Image (cartoon, rainbow over all chains, first blue to last red):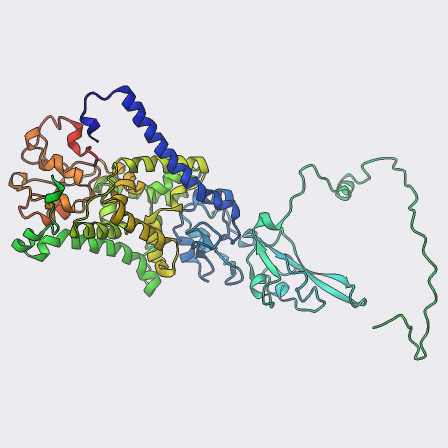
Length: 265
Length: 311
């Protein structure tokens, strides 16, 4: 170890030492790169204003200032097993959703820019997107008028609307389907928190997992037509539509009470 | 310095001569400082009196004083992210403070991991455990380079994936230490490493945070000086308690080489434990401008004499 005091240190020794040093530094970098890659698995929700998940870990120092300034104890720092890198802020909508404070104190507190200060209107936040994943369990899908997710939504009739559909089961009722509009939904999670089921049928997911993306070259023909004011292609030959021949329907049998036999209300 | 002669109860002579307080003064003050650094973070969550929010990674004191771990800011920069103004200002304040105080004062006086590794060292001394796997103290510089390269390569602040300093501090401040999280595991790992693998293994050989602060405060003003080195009777107490024992030799035994009594190595953490245990009053705190009697006008003859001998 006293090589330093040995005057006979050769160029070979120096190169060998430099090589060992480079290997050691590379080893540390390689080992640390393993947990660093975990960012792709993000599931839990980030605070409002959080920059893109691939950049988040280049900025967040895991100091917890956003957590301290959250007045509703929504935000937590991740522990091992929470699905986020240890020490980074997140929230679980089903436990405590974001209350969407107008002054956004968590963003104001962030010293690093991991939460982007350019977010000043909480309604523009994109913490995630609510998705009605439980289409077999959602009470509105079953034909009831639960409507709870729709009613608790801070952006009622914008982020969630009730869309009327035909109830195929009864044949004569309507379904009021809670429908999320991703351009308005902030991902606050109040709908997921309020869902009356044992396991929420509506869940907030990170944006990338919740929303598909059209190919950049895709065009919606009907929109293009409207923009152009006419069909984009001239002289389309409209061929006759050939339909299967409809079998003749027998006349419905009348019941003595005045109703029809086939109609079961 | 033959290991067989190392005392198992360093400071005993000092205690017999001057009493318990004199033999533990700097140790107690240091523990109070460490407790104080924790307390300012804890009064808020415990009793609602907010003094400092955040953790050692980044904090805000009384709503006006931002402090940021400068190594963290550097990693973020290499990862391609420029921090907010308050984060950058905080990093500059911390850099300036430790450039003046001596960088590794952080390790001795603020870092919570110091409690763990000091405990391990105390156990090793008390039971006379020999160092089984001696390592090169320059390893921490390699780890530091690895951290910086890793940050640039992955675009993330890589050291935060494993950093025991911020993990332990965060767990203490948020009260989650005993919830069975990563902080407890990594703290136990550091303790076991220092106990069973290498004496002063973590702080003295591997921690890149300490290595970074050492570089920052290499020319720090606050220094320990072996002013009364002529009185030294080679009892080995100071070497036994010193977490960076290689820093003492040049100052304490440099008279014959014309080296001044100031401990100038960047690795000294200004813990002052050598001052406590010395029964001959050899050491004292001073500044780097007081290179007292025995100082050599033309400076040290060889760099090796300035604490660069690494093991």
